[in-house]
Image: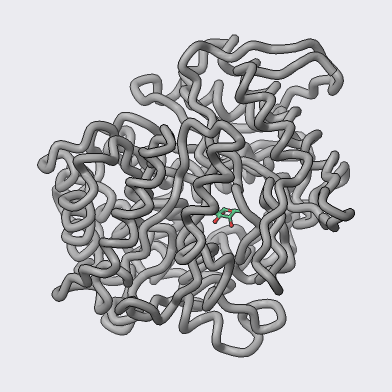
Amino acid sequence: MTAETITTREAGSPGLAFPDGFVWGAATAAYQIEGAAAEDGRGPSIWDTFSKVPGNVADGHTGDVACDHYHRYAEDVRLMTELGLAAYRFSVAWPRILPAGAGRVNAAGLDFYDRLVDELLAHGIAPYATLYHWDLPQALEDAGGWAVRDTAARFADYAAVVHERLGDRVRTWTTLNEPWVASFLGYCSGVHAPGRRDPAAAFRAAHHLLLGHGLATQALRAGGAAEIALTLNLSPVIQVDGGEREATLVDGLMNRQFLDPALRGRYPEDVLDVAARHGGLGHIRDGDLAVVHQPIDLLGINYYNPSFVSAAPAEPANPAFPGTEGIRFEPPTGPTTAMDWPIEPGGLETLLVRLSRDYPEVGLLVTENGAAFDDRPDGDRVHDDDRIGYLDGHLRAAHAAITAGADLRGYLVWSLLDNFEWAYGYHKRFGIVYVDFETRRRVPKDSALWYRDVIARNGLGSA
Ligand code: FCB
């Protein structure tokens, strides 16, 4: 795939029905909502360490308390029930299960997810468990983190422990969330934990994450897991000056670096060229790609926005994209969210159609899509029409992709709750439910009530 184009659709359009059985849900991640960081035997993760270093996270925010979901999970499941969610995607905190990353299993950590899963099932909500949403046990980072091969094997061991306990009730398992972010923001630009700035380590981390995905998939299959997914952050890359060489390279680094090994068993040549110039390829051993390339049931797609680039010979490499000297990442020109991310629903349609064309053997699930806006409560309500507009547009795009033949099985909004938005701390609110971070009170925003109606009618009403 080279230069992309995206379709623009009018808002305020007719009602749309989604296919029968389309799965509607919401997503969260452990470190962003749980809190209870030092409770019941949980060990430290790289995000505990990273967030405590001044300057890493806005205003020194940490996930120590977050939404206090660890204690309030039953209330949160009640909220999900009121919205009519069919599925809830959460992540398991590795350091709750294995406080030192390997070795001793912490029974109290498993007990928490056991309670959560039972509560979900009691309310008819399917639990979708993600095994790695970025909270690597600090002990494993101290031993080299994802830049060393052993971490992949430890991840598979951990996957087996969690599956053994929850596999009788959890059908859908996601190995990794967004390995590009974990490797290139964590080990290259350093804006995420563990905060390293070493391109060679980032390419090694990317490979070991993929290897960990393959090994964990084998372990989950051996344990009888019903449905296995890999979630990637994917973004159509559009070259605004009419060329395509630069867009193709960025697409390789961000998208194909993960899609092709996982779904085709090979790395794209353009990505190997860049990696070879940044530390070499010695970490990729014979047989690794066969392990990475396990049959999976679902590709999880986290889509927020397309990326815009142009050729600019004097430009230095982007800190998160080694090898991109001469490429400018263009700022958005149209409407944006509070993250300054462009609002381009058509990018989701482009992406879904491309994926179903290029990787037809795997089912598709939107595992994250949503937007941050500067929400403010108004009495007992939070009026977030901008978020409703964002979600409406993206659901229309998803529907158009289905009509064009994409095998899209469901949509999970990011996020159920306002939460700890990584380096932005609590300043960026992605929730459809507002959280007051003083009192931890939850208030469903207008978008939550709107989403409840979408779910109830399995589609969009006319606007
Ligand atoms: C994704 C992450 C998720 C959240 C959203 C806004 O990259 O998977 O945890 O931070 O972005």
